View 1 (cartoon, chains in turn cyan, purple):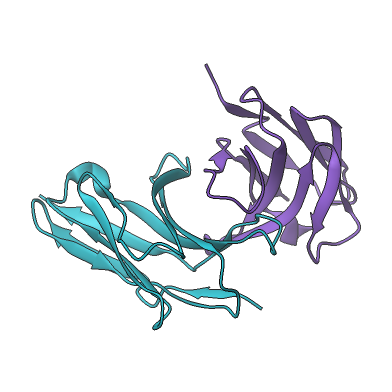
View 2 (spheres, rainbow over the protein chains, first blue to last red):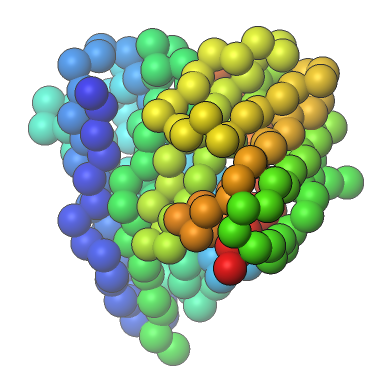
Length: 115
Length: 114
């Protein structure tokens, strides 16, 4: 069965600094997708960034980038120039066609941003 | 325009009652999902429908029954509510399943069973 693990329950970063959130996953599938979702206190789930497993190039979205290491089954999220609005719970998630498209989530990492 | 809406957003009820949560999406998506977020904020899939057909039914008590009257709606009915059912329930939709399509989430329904 596919599993996703986020080993950092909480992280803290100073405003304007860079922080990296860790995620590892386990799968025997070769075709899958990885996501980072953000959940601010408003509870709304917001897609931050996504990565196709077959692409070697790491995805980037403005201040957000990933370090995708397929052999190591690692998918970390780097947030550059952290802003107060980045404070939220961040979830790493796995999906594949064989899994019916469902998102399999990690436990989440609570990120706080200090002014 | 709200993409994925859920009603109600908050629901407080007593043990043993039956309740429903409604979900509607106006994105024209084919696939809809129900996720449960527990008190530790862990998110887990419950059900998924594709074109009104049930395609995912995780290990969920029979007291939970999803219904999809059409592609745009996926409702969740819960019988004989228990304390452990207290959680936030999220509806989501996507253009297709298993592809790199974003799942759009509703605002969530916080269910409190007393």
